[in-house]
Image 1 (cartoon, rainbow, N blue to C red):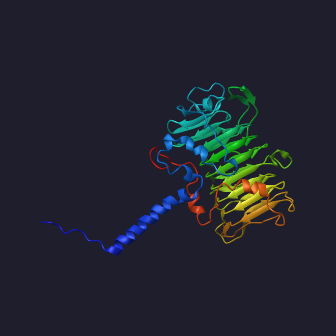
Image 2 (tube, helix red, strand yellow):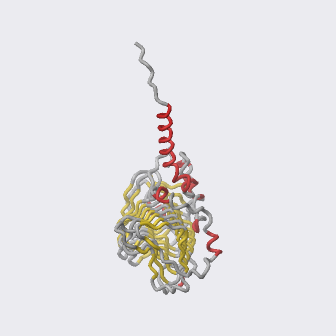
Length: 382
């Protein structure tokens, strides 16, 4: 006997279609609105076109090319010899004196025995593998240019002991003094882009940018479970960082962070479209008269109906500190203390970061939900 064909009410079909469209839109929104991600993540063939990433940076570090002009080098082993690294290891790749786009053959847990110094024109591209880096002082971006660090999970970085390290094939092996336990330390470097990394649990900072570093973008990273997240500027006395220009955008801060998201000295920081979970001491801090534009961020205070200040002005002359909050959203008691309202933002600096459109805050929680190292599969949209 022939069974009757099922009948679905027309209104039921419409409801199903609406639900499917909503689900599709929810997945598409981060790619549509995030100016960095939509540049490369829509392409299912990203693994065959890895260097496309080098055209996607925004903000002050937009010209960082990493190893775009070099060969693709694949890390095939997870051991670490600080003085005589084996071919196929990460340290062997980053010490070469030529441009390289560095990828990883498989999931790896690399424990560094000494700090890892990167030479100029290098990209660390963790897409397609689950790559953990931990150990002694982790990544050092020191006195170099054009570096991209993307898609890594960096954690449990410890203060290093004195010892010999291969700095590069040109400088050779040098004895270095103890280095702070930072996940990523950027010193005297220019044109650097740090994107889609997951950072936590280190002895010192998660990202430090100091000693005259400039033209930096820190984007789409996830920072959590740490005390001092990000420091921009070496000290109140050091004048080397007075010209620093840095973009901090589309990052997720928290849970479990206390302070420095970031802390800025002297330079200029555009802090845009970041999502802040409740913080312990302060979210954005500064000293020595920095210029800060906080734009389109979402700040979520503690869920106990008490006021929680976003900012901490430390040793900062209010007549010189120019701190602006523009179109930020403050939830659960969070509030921002502005300063220098009688002074305009430096227009030449302001124009330089207009390479991306700052989003409305209603989009920020969804966009930053995908911050951190992504799970990327070849032939599938990342």
